[in-house]
Length: 376
Image (cartoon, rainbow, N blue to C red; front, side, top):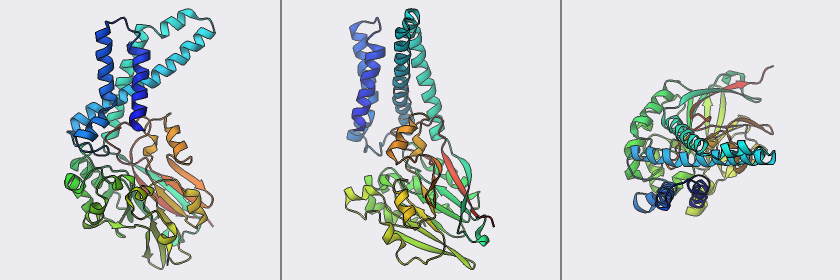
């Protein structure tokens, strides 16, 4: 499906930008073929250099291909907006404006703007994320736990794009928070254990007084899920795979639960099961659920979850088109939501998939969550 969308975008750019140019047939065909190669570079790397989720080519080349690919996508968006404006000018009988909008200068300007925006977006995607602090009030949080801090990491996507040094910087920035608890809500890696062993090694250094807990996301199932489970545990990560852990905090407690991802179905692994995750959990303490995807939040709220922490969406990556991501995730894409009596926080994530490495208006984040007891 992804390749079909990429092909459609490429055809639109060729139709609206390349073919109308007064170039020779050979020049237009050559340009169209170059754009097609960029549009389908994920298909090429999947078949010859690793896999779709984990292209095993140098990081610099991934950034170059990402810049050109994302630039082509942004150009298609700009061309569509230009065509809408030109159609409006035609309907208003503004022939001069219509001609100017579809002329060479505007077309060249749009192409330059798309490549510039893409370059900014690539830099935003690969930089070490800043800390985003969010205060969340839980009605049944004991007063003694007011101010309890959770550091949430999600969508790290260790790859040839986001390698060991980037991961070290993320871990150092997370540890500097001195949070009471560290959680990772899935999509830690892209690739096999052998390919990523050095890139994820810094996760061993994550520290908190109450442990470091993690769940899996959809990308863990794409390559070597059976190998990654023991590898994560060897890093000191306490996996919650349809399980919970009761954190005893003085005279009070928090139930921390985690579920697997629906991608497990294709691999015949454990389907996400909140009932199993909460089996045997004590009644009374607030329940915090780690769920990679925000979908299912309404069901989780109905089952007594107080706070759900998710990722997966990357915040939509590009402001504007992020609305499509929101539609695909039951209306949840970024930030804090009230879902019945439950709070849902969807992090933009620290990293992203190397095949689409862009962020515009949707910054990456390391999330510091400060729990607050209700007033009174």
